[in-house]
Length: 480
Image (cartoon, rainbow, N blue to C red; front, side, top):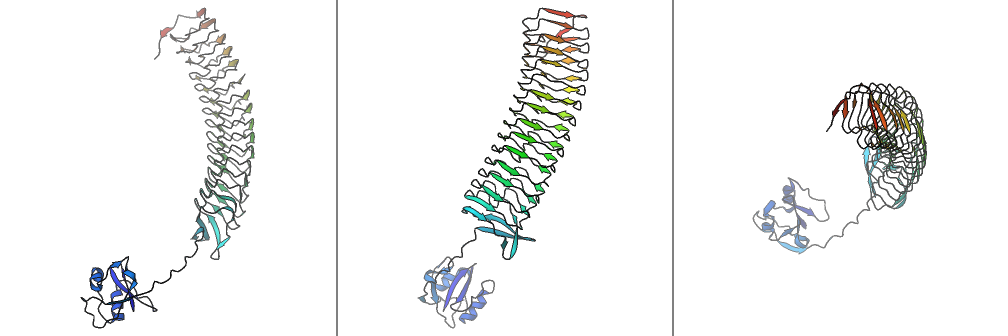
């Protein structure tokens, strides 16, 4: 007896109890030899058999009687039906999928049904497991504990991302690299130790680990990457090892419980917004190797009360300490040559500031909104005092302008307590709204160097009773 099967446009035969006849270009020949008669192929199968073919098998599993001298055009005789063969039991699938590598196996994906504690197998098919692949455990939200075996050398990008119930991870000292986002979104993870074997860690590694309170970082890591601890709002303290040379952008963004941190002398670069929104940060020691305090590096650190900037720093960039509303004092060293736009804007508790003779540029709104600042002296070294530099410093009573400044614009707008200002003879232009809203100003002397005076320069100076020109009155203008 032969069971006829329709496959790939051809007719093939299985000899019951014997070997499978080969399906392929030559299957017709094999079947013909088995039957001792010609075999009809392709679309003529149903016509030759006089029996419909469904899903590649004769309906009911019909058997075909071996008939000698069967002409190619004749129909085969269907004599009986075969019993249905029992299905082989399905082999249970391994919840962990592996992929062979040169040095062993990588875990490439695991079933999201895994729950509770998991010890990752050390070997697979007699070879070491050496890598946890990209996103391998991503979204395994019911796993609570993972032990990574010795032999694993790399944990790839997003390997354990969004394992939201994971509370502990054991990393062996065979691991040398951890990819970006490896533990991001592990919102239940409370503590972790990165062994000294690890030399490379990618960005966003612990981003969104909102329960993380303690972490030990390898002494051989050279960089804390972008978004490394961003939104780890339970992290209270951290020791940065002396091997670290750079802190990336938003590395500690919104770590709202972080109270103190020491940046070692090995660090030469602090990225943009590195500590933005660290609202509990009360003190910070900046490495003496840092040359730039980047844009918004400490912006919104509302509990920060004092900062000493080391004399290695040349530039304080845009918004570096903006909205540090608790900042009462700051020491700017004589290495600094530029105070960036909005660098200290809205530092509302800052009462005094000493600008060193090294500074040549004070950018727009650098001290705007410093409502507790009472007096300021601009040294002769400053050649550029951009618009609104001291705008809305409502407690400012006295200003001494250096002889390097040549023009003013919005500079002291809204300084409602200002009573005493000295304008040097280097000033050639007093631009629009320079002293607008200085309601306590009663008199001012304008040197003969001033050739241009905007009509709104002293707008809303309601107490101004006397203006003295040491030369001819300057040309009155109105800027757009």
